[in-house]
Length: 319
Image 1 (cartoon, helix red, strand yellow):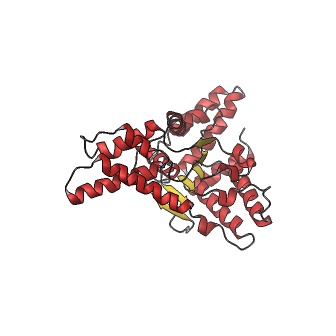
Image 2: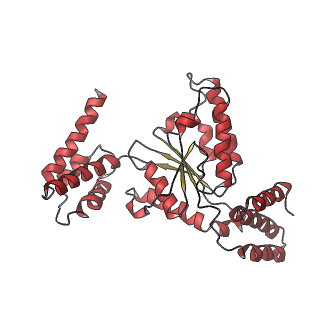
Image 3: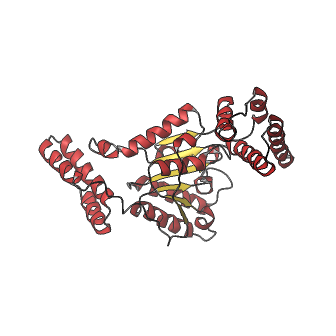
């Protein structure tokens, strides 16, 4: 028997013309009936919901009226993301569960939708969110923290509620970058009462969320985050600076694809150690631009010089 909340969700989904949400609730009811031994009813519900088809008109559009959300439609593939095998497998698992979420619903299970990504700047956190959105043909909405977090008491929580209303009504990938702005540890001495209230609101909203959307939060330092957050996420991805193998693949992807005769030496890989994925890509792109403008081939000496230049910039910043 459907619960009161499920009935309300069905009515709301019908009014909003949200086929995906409607199907989700029906499949949840079917899974519950199957557990009770009502196999015929469960089967009939699944047959009926399958007739809705795979309509997607209600999910691929932008909410331009919400200034806190920056919409985009990424066009990139998983093959372009240079990460460890472990991270790659986790991302593929997220994609596979989303694509087969109806099968999981039929057994009372849900797909991974709430993902936390932690890692140094430039290691691929934002690009990962773009890849996931692109692979699933979903719009991506980047939450603009500067417009979300305000100095006025209670206003940020209200805006956060509006963001989660959008998450519920418009299916997409919602990306919270620099998440520590609202997810900071409540036990830290410098945390004021308002920030604690914001975090409590986020914890409440994300726990109550049952939408079709994916929520991806990214932080440069997970140590700053409140421990209560971690159990709200279905998966945590830890990103680090590229390994030798990843550096090799980055050079191959950017340089060898441009100049098939370019040879990647162990010296270049060593020179790139300590730089992020984004910085290495930037070096490669600078070399390619120079090659195009000067009508000459890329040399290992040029790449090495650009890599050292990048490291010098960081040394100056740290000083």
